[in-house]
Image (cartoon, rainbow, N blue to C red; front, side):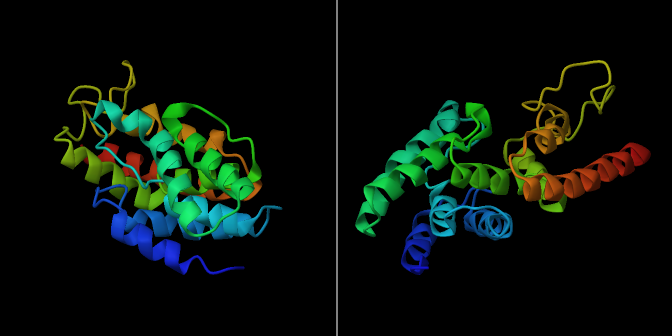
Length: 206
């Protein structure tokens, strides 16, 4: 496989220091994608190139433009990939994967490369790292940790713009059922179980 190191170095220079979408996030998704790609018939080089560029344009979660980040990342990725002599057919697979990976777009990617990117990215929202990222973003956005009278959304709709714990109920605990690949599903199940255990421990403490 032709080295992706030059592309990786460019991404490292360009990526923003967002608490949930920094270079460390990209490299964790990279590792997840490598695991999943082993069991799928995919072009691993294209999957990993898509991973490197999937968050190349980012906005804070509270910014209205955040819903357009994956589309803007796909457009910028096309320009960057041309510089590294990717074929037009490869650029289309990579940019389509980037465009459709985002949760807010509500799309299931058409290619296996796109499905692996989406699974690998969603895995980083789960488990111990998912918990850490959730509270990091909540803190940076100035949200309260939980709703005082109904912390676990028993009698109300989750509002994760106001309370960080609500994000588990609005999105994170739903991800396991949205995974595309067998390996992704298995890894998500394990990480989701850990988050449920965390919420149970939190319940006992508050």
